[in-house]
Image 1 (cartoon, rainbow, N blue to C red):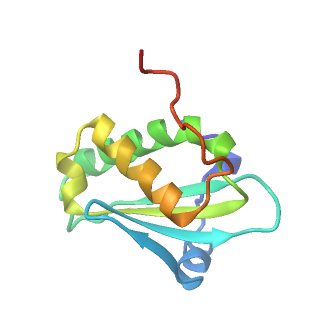
Image 2: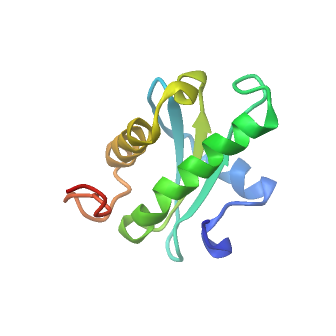
Length: 123
């Protein structure tokens, strides 16, 4: 689970990130980026009822996103990130979802290093 200081929880924080209008899209996810001058990176995840009608489906996707984002936190700059899930994300396995998130982070330019973002799970 993401530590509380690294989660976006307030509605106004989500709205502030949306209003900065910096966005990167993929078929499965949309990433909104809000730069900050200091502090730890914060992440928020949005899955609407239109995408996944059942609460357990929405929660599953958010749990997966939190789990794969945790090892990437030290590599993120001072940003607020909102990840909006689209319907194709529900069919992706964990590895596919991780690859999509890493690609979006790289496209948005929010990773401190351009090196390998592997969390050590591969052999």
